[in-house]
Image 1 (spheres, rainbow, N blue to C red):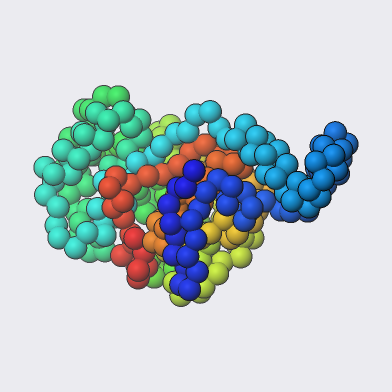
Image 2 (cartoon, rainbow, N blue to C red):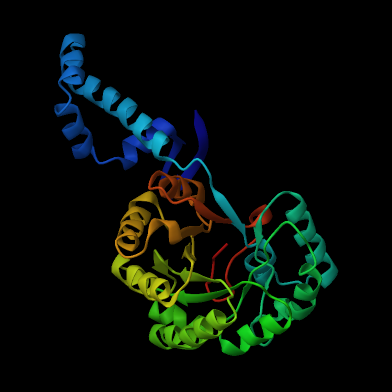
Length: 314
């Protein structure tokens, strides 16, 4: 069963379930499980294929284990109308945005991030946030959260009829300063005010963390930094925290330790993943997250997306 072909510079290979297992699963863990199962070890000796047999049996064993561990239900949070359109150079008419949101809701999506109450100076594409919110608030069958960068944005969103909001921080100091003009700590302090206001109005708040794998300026981001920001947002009261690979450079080898670090400080029920497909790795990274038990995944219709402050992000 071949999923697709990936290109990595000089390397090019076909990614199948068998290939994923061979590339991702710790061989030492496979050996330990094989050695602890006398029946399986005896079968291997009886067949007489030694190491080859061990590998084949290990793959079969972990295929069952992993597929049985994948969540039976996955919640999709569609962010196309906000995260997808914000990077479009041409201005998208409000009527087109509203039609897109209506069609997404008609398709059965239960959570659709409608827009962002950010200054039009920074994101001109979303200057019509108030008009978009006024129209979608009457739609039934879905939730329409909006992004709010600060208390002013939160207040504007609530005035426009928003019933759920989101805040966004970064695991990269440099990206935090270029994206929201403040340090990580300052951004977290801002969000305390937003969380207090939301709590008083019983408004649910989702948290986003950008650059969870790497930053266009800083390079690789230590998992511990991601875990630190995630724990802060969780402790503030965010009901869900979406971990975003902003520039799409993540692979299972870098995503796994990052998720492990966050899982140590944030309940898995609060975790979501947000992978950009810049280098064709989004699906494999999502598969890794599902294997670990995470069952909330962000999506963007038609692959729209990117970040105005992260060159090359798609």
